[in-house]
Length: 381
Ligand code: SF4
Ligand code: SF4
Image (cartoon, rainbow, N blue to C red; front, side):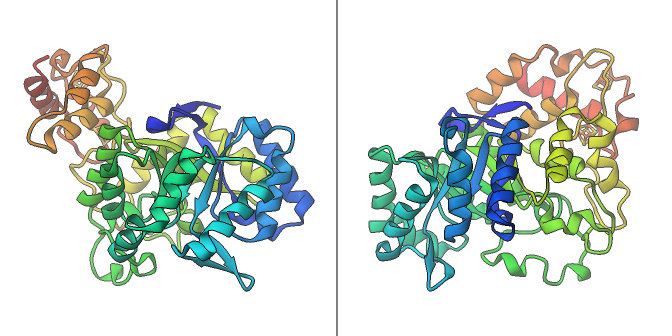
């Protein structure tokens, strides 16, 4: 298992994580066993957005005696009222629900204290002004949450979160289908009408959000990486083709700023399948060819940082140069951190000999040699 630093929180999380929402649909003992099995495979991060007692107890029991080997994303604002999950900023419910979380998890803190699920401006304004956010800071000051995070499906909210400076990581929904859709305050309506217009490359708002996360060192963990299984099924996939788990994991893990993808599991086989990403070949992880050959897409000319164009005879990391070039050019002045990162590369764009052998391997028709020339001019080497 490979581990990545989760932005400014500094914690080292496994690339493959555990989304806990399916734990509740099995016998308690089975789900505890599943979590322990995942830990044995090197998975060290689990998301617990769920407010129901059963899910929380399962995670708590699975972590007993090995609390320190897990990083927990625990949500503030996810409450359980009359036997139902309710999202709220009302402290009358939020406070006891968070105390219940700690007690059922059998711990005195969660590592990543998530401001739970904000998708609308109205909710953002409500949560960020007043007693809810004061409570979040209080939990942080008391060490009950070690780092402040936020979960959202909306890149507009994500960008606002990055700008706060105090939110160190974000749980965000990422998959190739969501990435092509414009921001929305209502996740359920995201694909309304998509039959009528061709999907059209990465939405600029989303691309900018990922770039901001990387620039500001705000870590991303990923939810809905398989679009609830729709992308694994040709009939339900908006691209008209099915992806494999390894391809979707690779897609998520190659977005700027991403540290871990949290998958949901019902069985040990599914854990094995996700973890097998770590030893998969480049061919097995190759989502780019699937998108490029899909009946419905238009990513043409846009670099997705897939790395499909390797190898370069002078060993330029083309995907990384393209990513840094995009990061630098999206704003008026290239940020120092991006310039430093670029200059630290073993081989820079100025070494490009213009052979264009990479271009025949790029499924999206990116004019790579031209971009290398532009990157070299921009960075001066
Ligand atoms: S240039 Fe093409 S093949 Fe290379 S990383 Fe970008 S999209 Fe992938
Ligand atoms: S065109 Fe440049 S970047 Fe592409 S393979 Fe040749 S040397 Fe490498």
